[in-house]
Amino acid sequence: MANLDSMVDIGAWEGEGYEIVVDSPNETWMTAIKNFTPTATLEGLTSLQKHPNSDEVFVLMQGQAVLLIAEGEDEITAIHEIPMQPYTVYNVRRNVWHGSLMAEDAILLIAENSDTVSVDKELTTEQKAGLRGLD
Image (cartoon, rainbow, N blue to C red):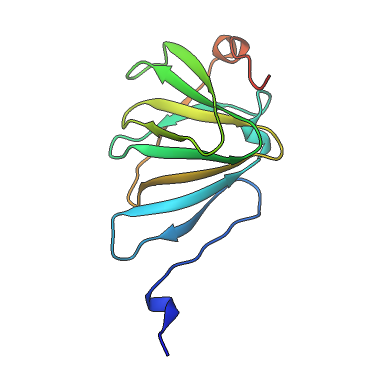
């Protein structure tokens, strides 16, 4: 009988927020699930992040979400809101400020390098005030 543990990695996450569900031991990538968390609301959002060493892929699996993409290198100069469509792949390039706003029933699938480094940038009151959020 085959040893399935050596053939397939299975991961799931039903808790709040972000959790790595498969960190491939033979590759350089990982997958995670991000469920709703209060920090994914207009009221709870405090910062955006970027990754100098990895692109990051987002797929909306359920619910409603908005992908936030920002211009600027060291400082955030403009924020763009992209309403996400289910089962559509959004690849955020390395060194691009990003974040997400999520409805309570939203689930995002995320893939990125397993050694991803995050740099966070706090949003100003003016930057937050300019966001529309979920329609």
